[in-house]
Length: 63
Image (cartoon, rainbow, N blue to C red; front, side, top):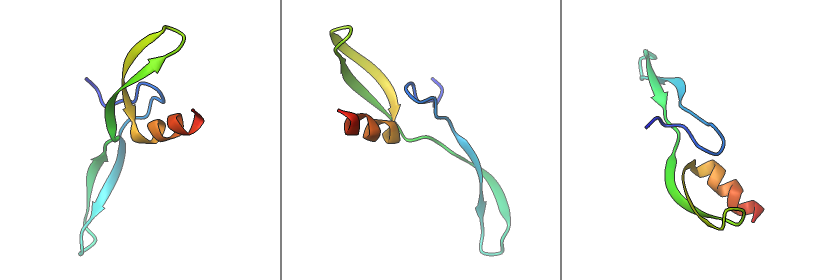
């Protein structure tokens, strides 16, 4: 399964690690994904989502 948030569509970001001698090597910054069950009032059942913590925080802020 790919590391993509099912709610927002966030995915990994490319960046650099910089050493003390300022040598740059590429790295991948992954999304912090969590498996959560969220109650859907529309479908009247639990839905399993692979959601980023940033989206989860804003989701609970709305409710």
